[in-house]
Length: 87
Image (tube, rainbow, N blue to C red; front, side, top):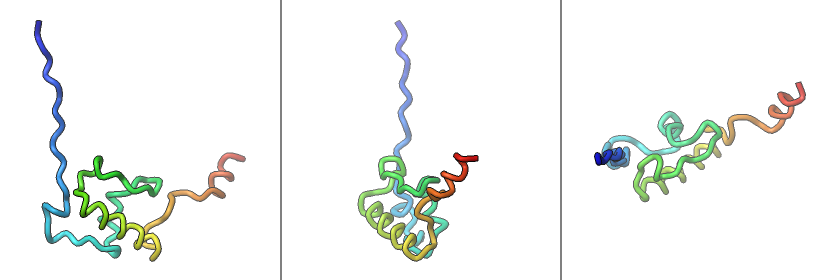
């Protein structure tokens, strides 16, 4: 009887630990967009692979960026959804 080898996923690594020159601040919205979904939710660290230290910093910077209106809170507003459903 032959045993199938299971796929072992590659170990995820923290982008910010690997590249020390990669800035993590609220002004770099292009970097922060990689860590939020199309709905505007922050992606969990088990999915992105960031370490706990950088995940906390990332969350803080995403929230700052939202307050400064560099990132959106959600992709669509409730009023837009209602208009589409009534058409």
